[in-house]
Image 1 (cartoon, rainbow, N blue to C red):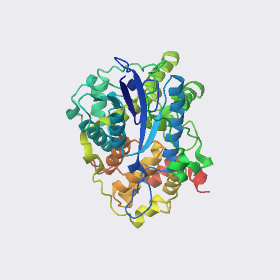
Image 2: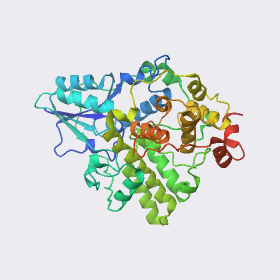
Image 3: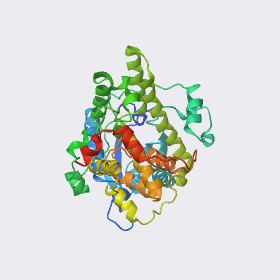
Image 4: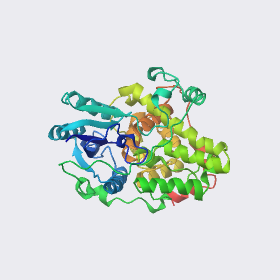
Length: 423
Protein backbone atom coordinates (compact mmCIF):
# COMPACT_ATOMS: atom_id res chain seq x y z
CA UNK A 1 0.00 0.00 0.00
CA UNK A 2 1.36 3.41 -0.96
CA UNK A 3 0.50 6.65 0.77
CA UNK A 4 0.70 10.31 -0.14
CA UNK A 5 1.16 13.13 2.32
CA UNK A 6 -0.71 16.35 1.64
CA UNK A 7 1.34 18.92 3.57
CA UNK A 8 -1.00 21.85 4.18
CA UNK A 9 0.28 25.34 4.86
CA UNK A 10 -1.70 28.47 4.00
CA UNK A 11 -4.30 26.46 2.07
CA UNK A 12 -6.82 25.36 4.71
CA UNK A 13 -9.70 24.51 2.39
CA UNK A 14 -11.13 21.59 0.42
CA UNK A 15 -12.59 23.37 -2.62
CA UNK A 16 -10.23 24.82 -5.25
CA UNK A 17 -7.30 23.10 -3.59
CA UNK A 18 -5.24 21.27 -6.22
CA UNK A 19 -3.42 19.32 -3.49
CA UNK A 20 -6.55 17.16 -3.26
CA UNK A 21 -6.73 16.45 -7.00
CA UNK A 22 -4.57 13.53 -8.18
CA UNK A 23 -3.59 12.21 -11.60
CA UNK A 24 -3.40 8.79 -9.95
CA UNK A 25 -5.02 8.57 -6.54
CA UNK A 26 -2.86 7.02 -3.80
CA UNK A 27 -4.00 3.97 -1.85
CA UNK A 28 -3.90 6.04 1.34
CA UNK A 29 -3.67 9.73 2.17
CA UNK A 30 -2.37 11.54 5.24
CA UNK A 31 -3.31 15.23 5.52
CA UNK A 32 -0.82 17.13 7.65
CA UNK A 33 -0.46 20.62 9.08
CA UNK A 34 2.65 21.58 11.02
CA UNK A 35 2.61 24.63 13.25
CA UNK A 36 6.17 25.86 13.03
CA UNK A 37 7.58 26.10 16.56
CA UNK A 38 9.54 29.11 15.32
CA UNK A 39 6.27 31.09 15.10
CA UNK A 40 5.83 30.71 18.86
CA UNK A 41 9.34 31.93 19.63
CA UNK A 42 10.27 35.47 20.65
CA UNK A 43 10.03 38.10 17.93
CA UNK A 44 11.93 41.00 19.50
CA UNK A 45 15.30 40.41 21.10
CA UNK A 46 14.47 42.13 24.38
CA UNK A 47 10.79 41.23 24.86
CA UNK A 48 8.60 38.14 25.22
CA UNK A 49 6.50 38.75 22.10
CA UNK A 50 5.86 35.74 19.86
CA UNK A 51 6.16 36.00 16.08
CA UNK A 52 2.55 34.80 15.82
CA UNK A 53 0.11 36.59 18.08
CA UNK A 54 -2.98 35.20 19.74
CA UNK A 55 -5.43 36.57 17.17
CA UNK A 56 -3.90 34.69 14.22
CA UNK A 57 -3.18 31.50 16.14
CA UNK A 58 -6.79 31.34 17.31
CA UNK A 59 -8.06 31.98 13.76
CA UNK A 60 -5.80 29.24 12.38
CA UNK A 61 -7.00 26.77 15.02
CA UNK A 62 -10.63 27.51 14.12
CA UNK A 63 -9.73 26.96 10.46
CA UNK A 64 -8.03 23.66 11.24
CA UNK A 65 -11.04 22.41 13.20
CA UNK A 66 -13.34 23.34 10.32
CA UNK A 67 -11.01 21.69 7.81
CA UNK A 68 -10.90 18.49 9.84
CA UNK A 69 -14.68 18.34 9.75
CA UNK A 70 -14.68 18.58 5.94
CA UNK A 71 -11.97 15.93 5.64
CA UNK A 72 -13.85 13.52 7.91
CA UNK A 73 -16.95 13.89 5.71
CA UNK A 74 -14.84 12.65 2.80
CA UNK A 75 -13.37 9.61 4.55
CA UNK A 76 -10.09 11.28 5.54
CA UNK A 77 -8.77 13.13 8.61
CA UNK A 78 -6.17 15.67 9.70
CA UNK A 79 -2.97 15.42 11.72
CA UNK A 80 -1.63 18.59 13.33
CA UNK A 81 1.85 18.65 14.82
CA UNK A 82 3.97 21.38 16.42
CA UNK A 83 7.69 21.49 15.71
CA UNK A 84 10.14 22.01 12.90
CA UNK A 85 8.17 21.30 9.70
CA UNK A 86 11.04 19.64 7.85
CA UNK A 87 11.67 17.23 10.71
CA UNK A 88 7.99 16.40 11.24
CA UNK A 89 7.36 15.79 7.52
CA UNK A 90 10.63 13.90 7.06
CA UNK A 91 9.96 11.59 10.02
CA UNK A 92 6.44 10.76 8.79
CA UNK A 93 7.73 10.07 5.28
CA UNK A 94 10.19 7.54 6.73
CA UNK A 95 7.56 5.86 8.91
CA UNK A 96 5.05 5.39 6.06
CA UNK A 97 5.48 3.91 2.59
CA UNK A 98 5.18 7.36 1.04
CA UNK A 99 4.89 7.70 -2.71
CA UNK A 100 4.85 11.50 -2.75
CA UNK A 101 4.55 14.57 -0.56
CA UNK A 102 2.37 17.29 -2.05
CA UNK A 103 2.74 20.88 -0.86
CA UNK A 104 1.84 24.29 -2.27
CA UNK A 105 4.35 26.61 -3.85
CA UNK A 106 4.94 29.40 -1.40
CA UNK A 107 6.42 32.87 -1.28
CA UNK A 108 7.67 32.40 2.29
CA UNK A 109 11.43 32.07 2.64
CA UNK A 110 11.23 29.84 5.74
CA UNK A 111 8.65 27.61 4.07
CA UNK A 112 10.79 27.20 0.96
CA UNK A 113 13.79 26.30 3.10
CA UNK A 114 11.75 23.64 4.92
CA UNK A 115 10.59 22.20 1.60
CA UNK A 116 14.18 22.10 0.32
CA UNK A 117 15.34 20.37 3.51
CA UNK A 118 12.63 17.71 3.20
CA UNK A 119 13.43 17.11 -0.47
CA UNK A 120 17.15 16.72 0.25
CA UNK A 121 16.52 13.95 2.79
CA UNK A 122 13.87 11.91 1.00
CA UNK A 123 14.64 8.42 -0.35
CA UNK A 124 14.84 8.11 -4.13
CA UNK A 125 11.43 6.41 -4.21
CA UNK A 126 9.65 9.40 -2.64
CA UNK A 127 8.89 12.60 -4.54
CA UNK A 128 8.14 16.06 -3.16
CA UNK A 129 5.74 17.86 -5.49
CA UNK A 130 5.17 21.61 -5.22
CA UNK A 131 1.80 22.63 -6.61
CA UNK A 132 0.46 26.08 -7.48
CA UNK A 133 -2.41 26.85 -5.14
CA UNK A 134 -4.41 29.90 -4.16
CA UNK A 135 -3.21 32.21 -6.92
CA UNK A 136 -5.39 33.97 -9.44
CA UNK A 137 -3.23 33.19 -12.49
CA UNK A 138 -1.16 30.19 -13.47
CA UNK A 139 2.55 31.04 -13.56
CA UNK A 140 2.94 29.70 -17.10
CA UNK A 141 0.23 32.08 -18.32
CA UNK A 142 2.09 35.22 -17.23
CA UNK A 143 3.46 37.27 -20.16
CA UNK A 144 6.98 37.35 -18.69
CA UNK A 145 9.47 34.99 -17.08
CA UNK A 146 9.61 34.91 -13.28
CA UNK A 147 13.01 36.61 -13.25
CA UNK A 148 11.65 39.40 -15.48
CA UNK A 149 8.83 40.52 -13.18
CA UNK A 150 8.02 44.19 -13.91
CA UNK A 151 9.49 46.56 -11.35
CA UNK A 152 6.16 48.29 -10.65
CA UNK A 153 2.65 47.02 -10.04
CA UNK A 154 1.25 49.29 -12.76
CA UNK A 155 3.48 47.70 -15.38
CA UNK A 156 2.61 44.22 -14.06
CA UNK A 157 -1.12 44.93 -14.24
CA UNK A 158 -0.98 46.38 -17.76
CA UNK A 159 0.91 43.38 -19.12
CA UNK A 160 -1.30 40.84 -17.35
CA UNK A 161 -4.61 42.45 -18.28
CA UNK A 162 -3.61 42.65 -21.93
CA UNK A 163 -3.88 38.87 -22.30
CA UNK A 164 -5.10 37.22 -19.15
CA UNK A 165 -7.28 34.19 -18.57
CA UNK A 166 -8.23 33.16 -15.05
CA UNK A 167 -8.85 29.41 -14.61
CA UNK A 168 -12.09 28.31 -12.97
CA UNK A 169 -12.00 27.28 -9.34
CA UNK A 170 -11.78 23.52 -8.80
CA UNK A 171 -14.69 21.73 -7.12
CA UNK A 172 -14.27 20.06 -3.77
CA UNK A 173 -13.56 16.30 -3.99
CA UNK A 174 -16.46 14.07 -2.98
CA UNK A 175 -14.29 11.40 -1.38
CA UNK A 176 -10.61 11.06 -0.48
CA UNK A 177 -8.35 8.02 -0.07
CA UNK A 178 -8.49 6.34 3.35
CA UNK A 179 -6.23 7.21 6.27
CA UNK A 180 -3.04 5.12 6.72
CA UNK A 181 -1.87 3.48 9.94
CA UNK A 182 -0.73 6.75 11.46
CA UNK A 183 -1.71 9.21 14.20
CA UNK A 184 -4.52 11.69 13.64
CA UNK A 185 -6.06 14.71 15.36
CA UNK A 186 -4.39 17.66 17.06
CA UNK A 187 -3.86 19.17 20.49
CA UNK A 188 -6.22 21.66 22.08
CA UNK A 189 -5.26 25.28 21.55
CA UNK A 190 -5.04 25.60 25.34
CA UNK A 191 -2.04 23.23 25.28
CA UNK A 192 -0.34 25.14 22.46
CA UNK A 193 -0.72 28.61 23.92
CA UNK A 194 -2.95 29.39 26.87
CA UNK A 195 -3.01 33.10 25.99
CA UNK A 196 -4.38 32.36 22.53
CA UNK A 197 -7.08 30.05 23.85
CA UNK A 198 -8.34 32.78 26.17
CA UNK A 199 -7.95 35.66 23.72
CA UNK A 200 -11.10 37.44 22.53
CA UNK A 201 -11.26 40.35 20.08
CA UNK A 202 -12.49 43.71 21.28
CA UNK A 203 -16.28 43.95 20.92
CA UNK A 204 -15.86 47.23 19.00
CA UNK A 205 -14.28 45.36 16.07
CA UNK A 206 -17.34 45.61 13.82
CA UNK A 207 -16.97 42.12 12.36
CA UNK A 208 -16.17 38.97 14.31
CA UNK A 209 -13.71 36.90 12.29
CA UNK A 210 -14.18 33.13 12.54
CA UNK A 211 -11.73 30.82 10.81
CA UNK A 212 -12.73 28.15 8.32
CA UNK A 213 -13.89 27.56 4.77
CA UNK A 214 -17.59 27.77 5.56
CA UNK A 215 -17.19 31.10 7.37
CA UNK A 216 -15.21 32.42 4.39
CA UNK A 217 -17.94 31.56 1.91
CA UNK A 218 -20.63 33.00 4.15
CA UNK A 219 -18.76 36.31 4.20
CA UNK A 220 -18.26 36.20 0.43
CA UNK A 221 -21.96 35.55 -0.18
CA UNK A 222 -23.09 38.11 2.38
CA UNK A 223 -20.87 40.90 1.03
CA UNK A 224 -21.63 40.33 -2.64
CA UNK A 225 -25.22 39.13 -2.71
CA UNK A 226 -26.94 40.36 0.45
CA UNK A 227 -25.20 43.62 1.32
CA UNK A 228 -24.33 44.60 -2.24
CA UNK A 229 -20.93 45.88 -1.15
CA UNK A 230 -19.40 45.08 -4.52
CA UNK A 231 -21.51 47.82 -6.15
CA UNK A 232 -19.87 50.58 -4.06
CA UNK A 233 -16.53 49.07 -3.02
CA UNK A 234 -14.32 51.66 -4.75
CA UNK A 235 -16.17 54.50 -3.01
CA UNK A 236 -16.24 52.92 0.47
CA UNK A 237 -12.95 50.94 0.59
CA UNK A 238 -11.10 53.72 2.43
CA UNK A 239 -13.56 53.64 5.30
CA UNK A 240 -12.56 53.00 8.88
CA UNK A 241 -15.66 51.79 10.75
CA UNK A 242 -18.25 49.09 10.18
CA UNK A 243 -18.53 45.63 8.69
CA UNK A 244 -19.17 46.45 5.03
CA UNK A 245 -17.03 49.39 3.92
CA UNK A 246 -14.48 46.80 2.72
CA UNK A 247 -14.66 43.17 1.62
CA UNK A 248 -12.69 42.04 4.69
CA UNK A 249 -11.86 38.80 2.84
CA UNK A 250 -8.16 39.09 3.73
CA UNK A 251 -7.97 36.76 6.79
CA UNK A 252 -9.55 33.88 4.87
CA UNK A 253 -7.40 34.56 1.81
CA UNK A 254 -4.25 34.73 3.93
CA UNK A 255 -4.87 31.37 5.62
CA UNK A 256 -6.19 29.78 2.44
CA UNK A 257 -9.76 29.20 3.62
CA UNK A 258 -10.72 31.05 0.45
CA UNK A 259 -8.87 31.25 -2.87
CA UNK A 260 -8.40 34.23 -5.16
CA UNK A 261 -10.09 32.32 -8.00
CA UNK A 262 -13.16 31.70 -5.86
CA UNK A 263 -13.45 35.43 -5.16
CA UNK A 264 -12.82 36.28 -8.82
CA UNK A 265 -15.40 33.76 -10.02
CA UNK A 266 -18.07 35.04 -7.65
CA UNK A 267 -17.42 38.68 -8.61
CA UNK A 268 -17.74 37.74 -12.29
CA UNK A 269 -20.99 35.91 -11.49
CA UNK A 270 -22.28 39.03 -9.74
CA UNK A 271 -21.31 41.12 -12.78
CA UNK A 272 -23.21 38.75 -15.06
CA UNK A 273 -26.35 39.44 -13.00
CA UNK A 274 -25.92 43.13 -12.22
CA UNK A 275 -23.43 44.43 -14.76
CA UNK A 276 -19.77 45.23 -14.30
CA UNK A 277 -18.80 48.54 -12.75
CA UNK A 278 -15.73 50.33 -11.46
CA UNK A 279 -16.17 48.85 -7.98
CA UNK A 280 -16.48 45.24 -9.09
CA UNK A 281 -13.31 45.70 -11.15
CA UNK A 282 -11.54 47.22 -8.16
CA UNK A 283 -11.97 44.05 -6.10
CA UNK A 284 -10.18 42.16 -8.87
CA UNK A 285 -7.61 44.96 -9.02
CA UNK A 286 -6.81 44.31 -5.34
CA UNK A 287 -6.42 40.59 -6.06
CA UNK A 288 -3.83 41.53 -8.69
CA UNK A 289 -1.90 43.54 -6.08
CA UNK A 290 -1.83 40.41 -3.93
CA UNK A 291 -0.59 38.43 -6.92
CA UNK A 292 2.17 40.94 -7.64
CA UNK A 293 3.48 40.85 -4.07
CA UNK A 294 3.55 37.04 -4.20
CA UNK A 295 5.73 36.94 -7.31
CA UNK A 296 7.96 39.75 -6.01
CA UNK A 297 8.54 37.88 -2.75
CA UNK A 298 9.51 34.69 -4.54
CA UNK A 299 11.95 36.62 -6.69
CA UNK A 300 13.53 38.65 -3.88
CA UNK A 301 14.00 35.88 -1.33
CA UNK A 302 15.90 37.05 1.75
CA UNK A 303 16.13 40.62 0.38
CA UNK A 304 12.39 41.00 1.10
CA UNK A 305 13.15 41.31 4.81
CA UNK A 306 16.04 43.75 4.62
CA UNK A 307 17.70 41.76 7.38
CA UNK A 308 16.41 38.93 9.54
CA UNK A 309 18.14 40.47 12.57
CA UNK A 310 15.73 43.13 13.78
CA UNK A 311 17.10 46.25 15.47
CA UNK A 312 16.46 46.86 19.16
CA UNK A 313 13.11 48.52 19.91
CA UNK A 314 13.31 52.23 20.65
CA UNK A 315 11.10 54.69 22.55
CA UNK A 316 9.41 55.97 19.38
CA UNK A 317 8.59 52.44 18.25
CA UNK A 318 7.21 51.49 21.67
CA UNK A 319 4.99 54.58 21.75
CA UNK A 320 3.69 53.79 18.25
CA UNK A 321 3.12 50.12 19.05
CA UNK A 322 1.20 50.90 22.27
CA UNK A 323 -0.87 53.77 20.82
CA UNK A 324 0.88 56.45 22.87
CA UNK A 325 2.20 58.82 20.18
CA UNK A 326 -0.21 61.62 21.11
CA UNK A 327 -1.56 61.70 17.53
CA UNK A 328 -5.11 60.49 18.07
CA UNK A 329 -5.67 59.14 14.54
CA UNK A 330 -2.55 56.98 14.80
CA UNK A 331 -3.17 55.88 18.38
CA UNK A 332 -6.75 54.81 17.60
CA UNK A 333 -5.54 52.65 14.72
CA UNK A 334 -2.78 51.03 16.76
CA UNK A 335 -5.25 50.21 19.52
CA UNK A 336 -7.60 48.62 16.98
CA UNK A 337 -4.75 46.53 15.57
CA UNK A 338 -3.60 45.33 18.97
CA UNK A 339 -7.14 44.62 20.19
CA UNK A 340 -8.56 42.86 17.13
CA UNK A 341 -5.76 41.63 14.84
CA UNK A 342 -7.11 43.61 11.90
CA UNK A 343 -6.87 47.11 10.48
CA UNK A 344 -8.29 48.80 7.38
CA UNK A 345 -5.95 49.42 4.47
CA UNK A 346 -6.25 53.20 4.88
CA UNK A 347 -5.25 52.99 8.53
CA UNK A 348 -2.38 50.58 7.74
CA UNK A 349 -0.89 53.00 5.24
CA UNK A 350 -1.11 55.89 7.67
CA UNK A 351 0.43 54.16 10.67
CA UNK A 352 3.21 52.70 8.51
CA UNK A 353 4.06 56.07 6.98
CA UNK A 354 3.96 57.75 10.39
CA UNK A 355 6.36 55.24 11.93
CA UNK A 356 8.88 55.41 9.09
CA UNK A 357 8.65 59.03 7.91
CA UNK A 358 7.62 60.96 11.05
CA UNK A 359 9.11 58.90 13.87
CA UNK A 360 12.17 57.82 11.82
CA UNK A 361 11.94 54.20 13.00
CA UNK A 362 13.35 51.28 11.00
CA UNK A 363 10.51 49.96 8.81
CA UNK A 364 11.38 46.36 9.71
CA UNK A 365 10.19 46.87 13.29
CA UNK A 366 6.80 47.95 11.99
CA UNK A 367 6.60 45.00 9.58
CA UNK A 368 7.50 42.61 12.39
CA UNK A 369 4.83 44.08 14.71
CA UNK A 370 2.24 43.63 11.97
CA UNK A 371 3.49 40.06 11.55
CA UNK A 372 2.77 39.47 15.23
CA UNK A 373 -0.64 41.14 15.30
CA UNK A 374 -2.43 40.48 12.03
CA UNK A 375 -4.98 37.73 11.53
CA UNK A 376 -4.49 38.24 7.81
CA UNK A 377 -0.70 38.18 7.91
CA UNK A 378 0.70 37.16 4.55
CA UNK A 379 4.47 37.24 4.25
CA UNK A 380 4.53 38.64 0.71
CA UNK A 381 1.84 41.30 1.13
CA UNK A 382 2.95 42.42 4.59
CA UNK A 383 6.66 42.81 3.93
CA UNK A 384 6.08 44.00 0.36
CA UNK A 385 3.70 46.74 1.50
CA UNK A 386 6.06 47.91 4.23
CA UNK A 387 8.94 48.12 1.77
CA UNK A 388 6.67 50.05 -0.59
CA UNK A 389 5.76 52.60 2.11
CA UNK A 390 9.43 52.87 3.12
CA UNK A 391 10.28 53.67 -0.50
CA UNK A 392 12.73 50.83 -0.99
CA UNK A 393 12.83 47.61 -2.96
CA UNK A 394 10.70 47.44 -6.10
CA UNK A 395 9.49 50.77 -7.51
CA UNK A 396 11.53 52.76 -4.95
CA UNK A 397 10.41 56.29 -4.11
CA UNK A 398 11.36 58.42 -1.14
CA UNK A 399 8.29 60.71 -1.25
CA UNK A 400 5.63 58.22 -0.14
CA UNK A 401 4.63 60.21 2.91
CA UNK A 402 1.14 60.53 4.38
CA UNK A 403 0.27 63.76 6.17
CA UNK A 404 -1.68 61.99 8.89
CA UNK A 405 -3.47 65.13 10.11
CA UNK A 406 -4.80 65.81 6.61
CA UNK A 407 -5.64 62.14 6.26
CA UNK A 408 -7.59 62.24 9.52
CA UNK A 409 -9.42 65.37 8.42
CA UNK A 410 -10.37 63.74 5.13
CA UNK A 411 -11.22 60.18 6.25
CA UNK A 412 -12.43 60.87 9.80
CA UNK A 413 -13.75 64.46 9.56
CA UNK A 414 -16.09 64.14 12.55
CA UNK A 415 -13.62 62.17 14.66
CA UNK A 416 -15.95 59.16 14.84
CA UNK A 417 -13.16 56.62 14.32
CA UNK A 418 -10.96 58.23 16.95
CA UNK A 419 -13.87 58.43 19.39
CA UNK A 420 -14.74 54.79 18.72
CA UNK A 421 -11.32 53.60 19.87
CA UNK A 422 -10.28 56.46 22.16
CA UNK A 423 -13.54 57.53 23.85
